[in-house]
Every structure is written in structure tokens, then in C-alpha cells.
Image 1 (cartoon, rainbow, N blue to C red):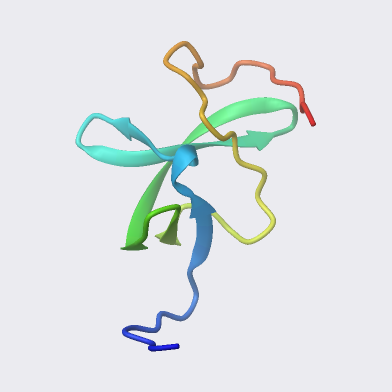
Image 2: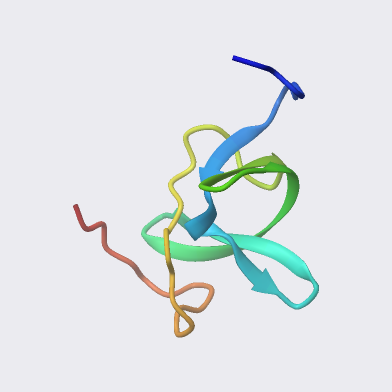
Length: 80
């Protein structure tokens, strides 16, 4: 294994969680059963995952592939 970079204090999430919000990147976090649009600061990006420096914390529940119709504040249900 070759390590090319190391970052501390980042959260790794699937690329499918990222959406564009104007010129910024964001994700939808699930908070109290509702989708919450949350701006994020990206760090390293790979083929399947991205590391996020700020905006989400370890343990946050994110919506993967949210689609174009999801809006901030909409009630959501977990699907397995």
C-alpha cells in the first residue's frame, strides 16, 4: 500500500450523498425525521468516497442519492 496523503478530523462519505447547492457542495442529513440540507467542506475525493472537513460529524445519518425533488425540512423514512 502506498499512502499519498493523510488528513485528520475528516468524515468519509459515499459520493452519492453529495449534491450541488449553488456553487457549494452539500448533503442531506436526517435530523428528527426530516431531511436537512447541510453545506459541507470537501477534502480528498476518490472514485467512491469523499472526505469532508466540515458540516457533518461521525455518526450523522445521510441520504444517499437524494434526487432532485427532495427539499430541506421534508419528513423522510429510513429504507433498508
